[in-house]
Length: 259
Image (cartoon, rainbow, N blue to C red; front, top):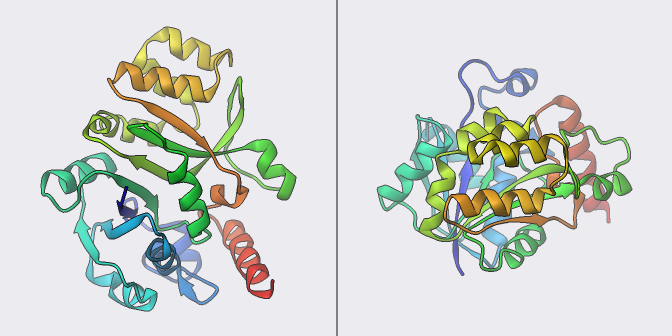
């Protein structure tokens, strides 16, 4: 399938701490190794054989013109103004015909994203209506033993998000209605699972269910097939939210250049 890639480049009201730290007004434009984070993500998606077009979603559009030009994309890049939150913005894009399924959703603060990561993720989506990329803790610690991430602990391991989501068919629209809840409750996933019944929430609390099974059961209750995709490269879970993340991202990119 050829995907439309959606880059979430908005930011919450107020001053973003990372942008403020680097003297920027917009988090997506914070430079990593001399280029805005957004430019890195655009270049990766442009290099992906599975992506046909790219759409940037944010509260504004003009501010990204230079970052888009720097990426030198060969694929169509459009911007879409979204002011009502992630889920409503994605629904508005679909309803306006600005994008169609299948969708690949990622974030502008993911400058370490590579075309290989995208290929692995989309190659493992299978027949899922919704797929979520995650990195298991042992995979991360094997390469980055001092990594500090938010870990969601389940029976099948501890997981950190990789900011990659595939929505392949209209059945996945049901997941968008819970997207905002997932953001608000991402550090306490049992609260998200309570939307699917207290039995599933209790199993999440007691860690008697794996994340893969929990997602599959939650998806079934929404009438869709939901799937966990474990990522092989731990770097997939390193986004840039703090100065320490920024330093790590630059170290990884510089190491790649040297190699």
